[in-house]
Length: 145
Image 1 (cartoon, one colour):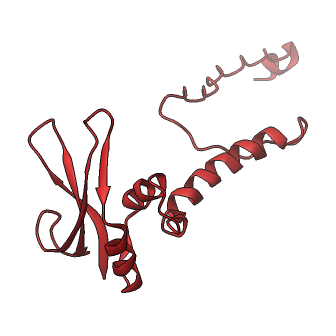
Image 2 (cartoon, rainbow, N blue to C red):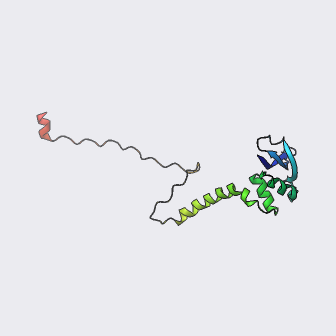
Image 3 (cartoon, rainbow, N blue to C red):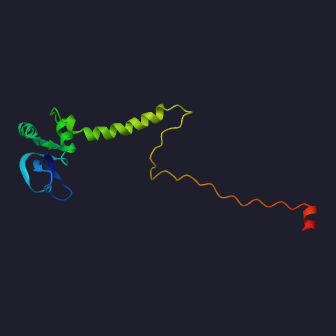
């Protein structure tokens, strides 16, 4: 399966990326089938140059852009990238939906359980109570014993 993805280039602490078509099982820096453009996020303003005609051609041949590439292309004005960003959108919608459900729940009803976060303090466990002192036996029982 072919993927349109980013391949990192550039020196340490100064990343730049190539937009390439590559087999999804090949190494990130090797095995590129075609070079479609480049992206330099460290420049001001960020540089994104690509060949839209080549990208559309590869998509028509079955290549799928990764989530990151689809987001970059969508922001650059390429149409039809929304369907490749669907996993990202579903994840965000599910978080928002959970928050909205918690807000919409009536006050008397129990709120849906939220996942425990590491920052939340653990619930305090009740301390075991000391055994109750036994009452003294009545005088009659003492005498009988």
